[in-house]
Length: 106
Image 1 (cartoon, rainbow, N blue to C red):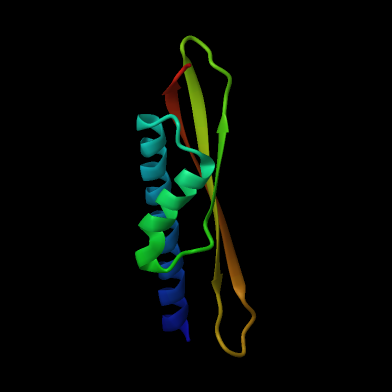
Image 2 (tube, helix red, strand yellow):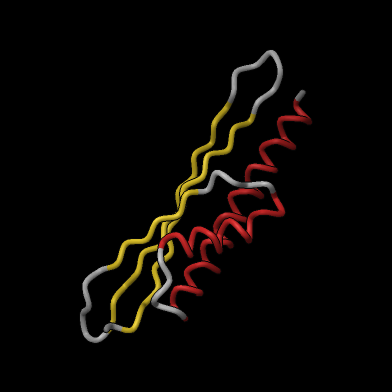
């Protein structure tokens, strides 16, 4: 049982790392194309995570007002991973991460 627990916890850490990587790639896409919407960023992240089977990742964007010719965009992702074994309680791991990128002010 300990071996399965170690594997499940390792898989959750791999999933968390993958979510962070997908969020960083999505934020870079937003930085290159300021007209992308939240749905576009969600689609980019979902496409990158599709191979792992991670569909329950939620991506949000908040943008600060322009200051000094730039705006800062905060791209956030939240993800819940549940470790479950038969005859044991489920162990949820909730993860939230954020990436901030500068956007050219318009």
